[in-house]
Image (cartoon, rainbow, N blue to C red; front, top):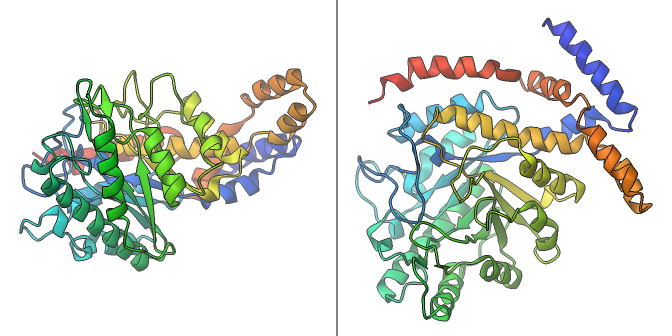
Length: 422
């Protein structure tokens, strides 16, 4: 379709939305200001670069699939991220794990990491006008083989991971200072038990004490923010997880930390969209790890499903966007990894735009009048509004491909670059 025809389609859609009191231009401007934090670990199956044969192990998590062409080093991973970002509208962030440090080939223990080991990542982000977020890596390490880290009964193990958490916070603060935007450093640990434990209390008390030590050093919130993340279960921790939702909700309330809600970290019948307004009654900010669990925390690529739309609706309807840090967390090794980034991130952005052009004024009016009939009617009518034309216009203005045209670029990159990797 010619450019002027596409503009005409958008003009018709804009007018149709305008009849309902919805300003699509304001929505496009607002959307452009919302960053999504892309998770680096989709590009290499959560392996990291600590050694030539580094791969995911332990932690109750698993990347499945063997699609060829995964990144083997930081330069390849950055190149893959650049290709993905070129196909995603907007300006976004990079979410990095500690195991992606670049140490010049010399082994550096995780409790000895420094900001210099991430200087190339920081320079890369600065050159692209991106912010960064950070995560301690409490898995894929001999000191995590017992299944316990910050809550371990072994004081040496516990001390090692406390020190890791402390250096990670300093690294995150260095990222925030260098890039001029606060870095969110997230704490997630895999600690738990495959079978039913006798002592649930002891590990949680040790975790509480360890977290207080991790967070003891005051850091400027203008450059650094802390988050804590819960989980229901993992492989090898099916019966008991130390860092439960209740534990971290209480900790975040007591300490002012961000609470991280991961879409795959709850019971399959639970959804985080229903938790957002509840936790915002008690915490100032949240971090989202948007994923898609299929029967368990399987970290499938985010699709434009009902729950993703519900998450975006809660953020927009509740006016929570300024208090929410949106990140993605999936690692699908069964499809082209760059395509996975593009599909998942574009869907997150689509969901936000859909929420921004929702006739929420009419919906609120009907609800306030206890008119459930009108509310349901408008909810259903909104589903057939010409959203696609607004989305295509946003992609055009952000100079990225509309529709599925981006897939041709990914296929060419696969032919030119990915296929050459052994």
